[in-house]
Length: 240
Image (cartoon, rainbow, N blue to C red; front, top):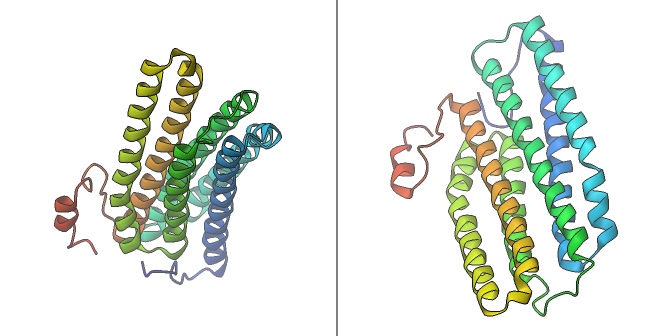
């Protein structure tokens, strides 16, 4: 499969079906990206109304997953795709599952943001969450961009960036534990921050999964559980 194109088919309608399918996935991706961004903004700014809106809109993400999954089933039944086309369909089915779960994590952050909006904001104004949210948002955006362009090289690089998010998440955990030990009055807020940081870290994991599906689509290689370190990435040089 060539980058940026799904390749020609004998049936023009089949081409249109595949392009429309990929477009719908990107539309779903754009929605969950906005949900995730709004959830972090709601938390950092103490915007309870925006937080409630994020939580309420999760049904839109769920509806898009169902619609795309049904379209994939129709194509599998009527077109009997093979080779790269079959890989595309399989990867899309997996991708929308991860996108739906990203929506669920954004919904969790929205619920917590609504609760925290009722509390007095800390001096740091959730600076650590804002930074983690920025990293995760960039990773998700880059993953969707790699999907749109079928860019396996970029996708593989993004997979490696997940460790930066993991390190930031670990730092927030240590910080929250320190706060709770030094001042028990911060326990409730610190626990909420821990849940938010965990949700954002999980979004990063789902973005990484999407990148792994891109490599599978383009090269037919399953790199799950293999591209965890730079040394292992070098061993994948023959893939790209």
